[in-house]
Image 1: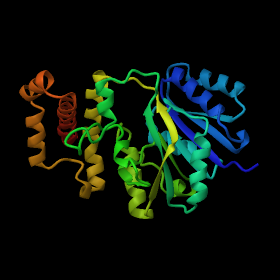
Image 2: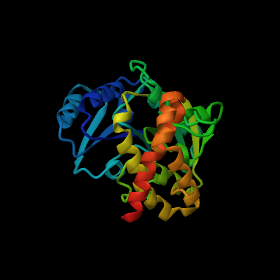
Image 3: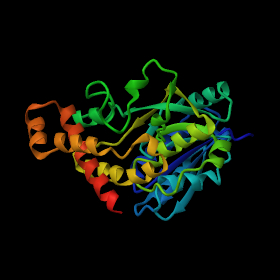
Image 4: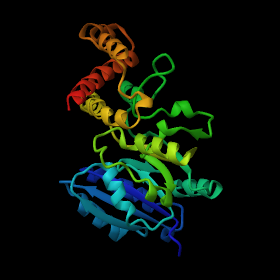
Length: 305
């Protein structure tokens, strides 16, 4: 039987949610021997290996386990590609819980859009079991400030009613591409920090292969990952610090803000302004200003590297 699709999941110290992720994939309303799951353990120190081994025993879907020293998600995905048997590759996160028709939704689009440069983006929303805080709402709304700016995680509201997305929506939490395309254009291993390896590949495929990214809002994956401000500083700092690497490759995108823009970000994220926004302003403005504070700190530190 032809293996039609390979689902690649990089994971790091998230054994408990990975267990649920694999269970959802085993419950797909699709022929079980026509797709496979590849879990790449990126140097976990928890019981990730045992979770995968137990899932293999219970699953009617082929689940493969690979291990590497901690090198980041991009390297992990490239590693899995060497072993993937499917002609279509789906990338999801270890904390993405898919609906029963997830595989079918991705494959139906690829049957319709058969060219090598045609890819499919699925929808990602917060898991219904989570209590979505104002901070989490902001993270997934890219239009919350003046209808243009907002959180950096996802921005699906901008795709409402649209059939296609650009490289900025190259979300590896729920996306599928032809394996032959990825074999020629793997993830850039230099991008080991959070936030750039996916966008870099999306832009590179757009430039070199005229990537067409179709949006299928019915290919649904729920994000089971509570988030708060505690990890926000580290995340935005890492994005800012590694922005210089992206800027060096693609200066035309201006991911490192020009000096005048950095001055504006410095003003709106100053201690005084942040204090005013937190006390009197909207949550969206406060979180946006706070994100620029941490991003700028990463930008400045990255410039010294």
